[in-house]
Image (cartoon, rainbow, N blue to C red):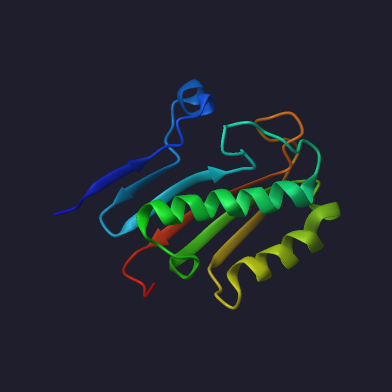
Length: 133
């Protein structure tokens, strides 16, 4: 029997847009695009790509921790990057550091804008908890 577990931070954006950060369906965890929200739901680094990417990875880790999952169980990710040409090298470097040898399927899309003013990166991903933690 499949189980379901929904995760939310309880920030206004979730109710304003009508979504959950993640939902578990059986062994899979589908994670909405994570971005650089701080613990209080604020967006402290508009326009600062490196700071946003670090905080986005922290948000990803918070979701993983909720489900008792690890980075090594991420099977795919989609990165949305404003001004990809300018940020491609930093994106690749941070991705390699975040996954430390693990290689999920990955798509990187250059976009003209994201939801929040000054937002430069967002990462959605899929976790398979059947993989070794």
